[in-house]
Structures are given as C-alpha cells and as structure tokens.
Amino acid sequence: MVVAAKFDHGDDYLVEMIELNKNLHPYFVATQSHPEFLSRPNKPHPLFCGLIKACGVVYSQSDLLVQHLYFSFAKRIRGRITSFLDEINIWS
Image 1 (cartoon, rainbow, N blue to C red):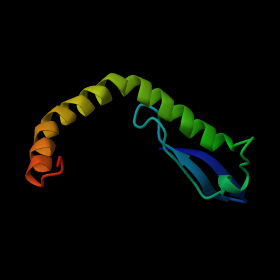
Image 2: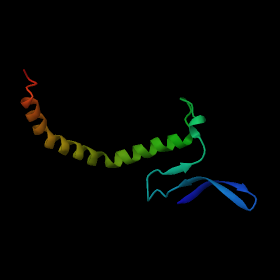
Image 3: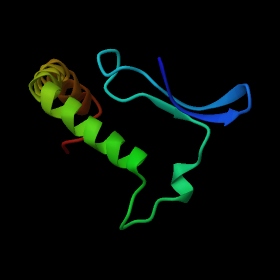
Image 4: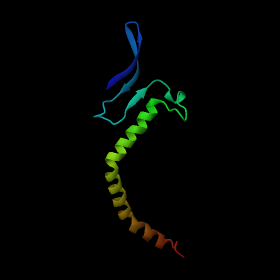
C-alpha cells in the first residue's frame, strides 16, 4: 500500500488517497475526495480515465480466458435449457 496523497497539517498529516502496487492489483485506489464532482461528460476526472484504461488492459489480457469460460459454460447448460423448454412445452 502506498500513500498517494496526503494533507500536511504541521507535524501530522491526513491521508487523502492510497493505492496498491500494480503487481498486487491492476487498479486499486481509495480516496476521500469526490472526483465525480469534478468530472464532466467531455472531460472525465483522471481517476475515472485510469479505471477505464486498467479495465481495458485486464480485459485484453484475459480475453481468451473469458471466451473459453463462456463457451464452456454455454456447452454445459445448453442441453439442460433445451430439456427444460421441452418439458414446459414452450415450442407449441
């Protein structure tokens, strides 16, 4: 954990934002600020831009895994769904 922002108050300070290293989590930020108040549709706050960018990196790295899991799941349930629909006579 890294203190990313702090408010100095004499000998003390108040932690305003923390982050985890990227090797622990692709995007972890905790803040006491309100970046949503500073965001506009045409100019989002950098914290939101960072989140979207991190999602894109993680998705591109795991895209094949996601596809594999989705199609494996679809294969397993396809027969069950068809049987259920036949059972409740949805086709007639």
